[in-house]
Length: 147
Image (cartoon, rainbow, N blue to C red):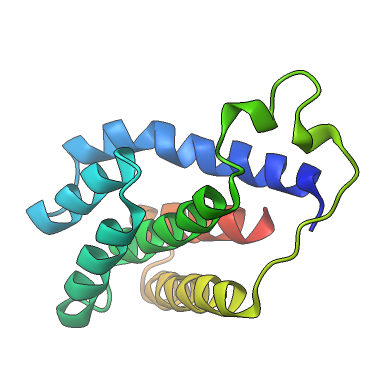
């Protein structure tokens, strides 16, 4: 995967992170709200644990599924060092023509989360074509996958 690809990924996900502060005010419950706080503090492993625990008893929570995808993606990006500002600054690594490979385990984990979320959103939209939450989270999942 080229570094430029990570730039697009970073920009797309950055919009989600910027929205986290707004989302915090409307978090559907304290567990997800606490996990979002961990996301904001770059504690992605803790956020993933809390979201997975919540989803074990609330498997249809689109909000939590999509934040689990964000936590998974950001954790991988942090581990690879592509969340650092020096990557995107003048002459940064993002502008070089090197490539980054993605581990099959990470790819499988991320896409399984996004697939589950997308299936739930589509199911809800079949029941109610005007379900705005389902439309929103389907779009977020699509955008995350596209990057």
